[in-house]
Amino acid sequence: MNAGLKVDSLVMSLYPEAQWLFDQLREGSADAARGGVTRDTYGPGEQFAHDLVAKYAADLGLEIRHDHMRNTYMVLPGLDRAAPAVVIGSHLDSVAAGGNYDGAAGVVAGLIAVEAIRESGLQPECDIVVMGVRAEESIWFQVSYIGSRGALGSLQATALQAKRIDTGRTLAEHLLEAGGDPTAVERSAAYLTPQNVKAFMEVHIEQAPSLAIDGHAIAIGSGVPGNFRYPKIKITGEYGHVGLGRRYRHDASLAGADIALGLDKIWAEWEQAGRLMACTIGEFQTNSARHGLTIVPGEFGLSLDVRAYDSADLAELKEKFLALVKDVATKRRVKIELGPEASAGVAPADPLITSQLRACAKELGLRAPDLPSPASHDSAAFYAAGIPFGFLFIRNPNGSHHPDEEMSVDDFLMATSVLTQWLVTHCCKN
Image: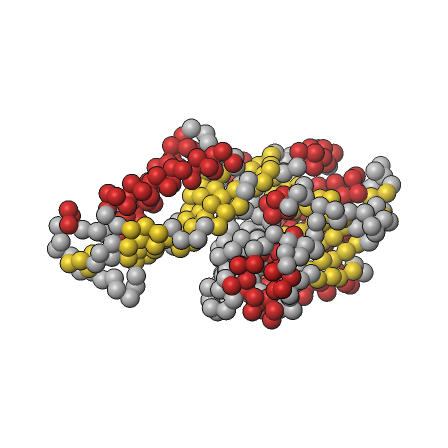
């Protein structure tokens, strides 16, 4: 690389531009009623964010493209336009009343890195593409990685009939309204392939406080966990009188509690043994139309997400979960229907890219330990499609998926400096 080029100084000089982008994203998608931001998937909030970054990129002179999912691509042309591109990106949607940086930081990082390269006068050998991904947050349609899987040709056509939780309208309807093409999903059309993308790079806030606790501003992501999910588990027992004896009950709510406590016991045992996993029950409720103070619940519903970093561990956890369900159903004399399963495989970061990112951080004098991701990310969809990925984390002391999510622009620019150093070293003609 150019020995006289000070990548970190160049990136840090773009502090005002980065701050402006984050401020605009926050102001344009602020949720006045609930706090934080709401960039609803295939809705006005997400569309605003895509329009904002596309205009910023166009003003930089980048080419703007869209695919059949309406993902946004902002392209810095390379010397060899036919060569496989490097794609930098993340998602621009958010959960309802979420934080401003989850996902968006990765898109802004790509834009700032590309702007720094343009100002340096270096020419990339291949196209560098900043991708604003659609629909990563599965809360809206209960489907994972909609935008990235759609672009990669791996989104199941059945996902088109998934209904958004607030509008009740299908993904196909929302996609068509946004200018996308549902029939391309039905054909498994792939806009991105291992033949036209040589690497995917993602920068993301950490969605846990470990970096803040350990005193690190950034980290290098070592991988994304796999998971199995059951969005709509249904437990059916019998409604009964409040005075009914325990031995006569078919209590659906206690069956749900048994499942929750059983999973937590497994998690505690694994944690004590130093085995990484996580379990989340996001929905947990009786039927509001029939429950009451003096009624034994006959219906109960819950959702489940279980994740781990090793495929064998994930398979073992699923086996334990299914055994737990069978035991609870027998013990509580209830029927447990798991409903449709959604899952994603374990996705390790590419070893070579990870090693290169470590070297780039070291060259810049930055401490960047390896860190496994606690959350799912679009990188996993790229890995499943055969495209290697690299990952960088940014410190966030307050967690994520709520308004208090936090990230300093200084920390953000440290991660962006490492990304830019990698691009300059491995993708640019010197």
